[in-house]
Image (cartoon, rainbow, N blue to C red; front, top):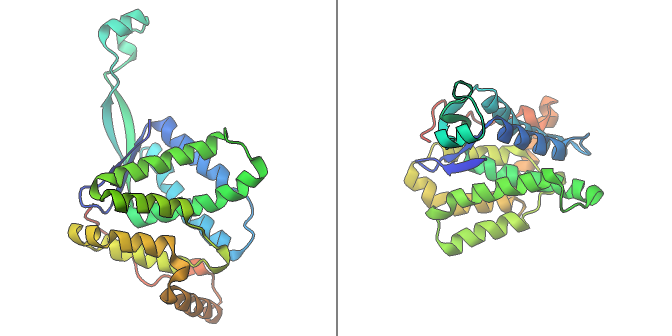
Amino acid sequence: MLKVELTKNYAGVTIYGDYNDLDFLYESISYLIDGDPSSDEEYTMQNHLYGFLYDVRHAYQGDREAILVDNYLQDFKRKWLEIRKKDVTEHNVYFCFNYLLPDIFLDMVLIKYFIRKVDKKVNDVYNPYINMVNYFYSLVLHSIENILTEIKFNKIKKGLLESVVTDSIFIPQWFENISINYSKMTKKQREKEFMHIMDAIYSYGDYEDYLKMKIDVEKLCKEKNCSLDDLHYEDYPEEIEW
């Protein structure tokens, strides 16, 4: 089963799962965001989610980290099931990787955008891909519950439920700067700034600085004859104190 834990210094979450867990998470998100984008901004939104999927795929391929988890197959159970001892071990392998908190919450907001598009066509409460993503959302939310007051935690849940991405005004640089700045903070700074950061993700369109950045970025893209995805203000640090 999937498992999500907050990292020691609140930089992000560690996402765990066996091969099938992570493969189905990958398949579910891929299904939801698949298709030709209807705008350049939607293309950029897809690209951000492909970044997350890149990490998921490399995790279950064994390119990140792994832990051993007890499979609880006791000897008497093994014999009862007629499984030969040489065919099993005492542990299962869980693959895992770290992912920054601002990025995972942005991704959850973006996936909601694509779910709305798919759900209008499918309208199926039993859609396994949508349900898998909702399950993943609950794991991420549960991972941060203990560092927040009940009021703040409910606000985070409500914000995720009500947040809406408008592809016509979406630019990635705003969110990239948030994540880079967050990655450089100390644990205390992250704890202090967390609610402000979530608001800047959930309600980005309400920020005058965001709208100004959008104008500046689009002007720069025109001057350089490049796409939104080609512009980066700063690089992520090589080492993050997870």
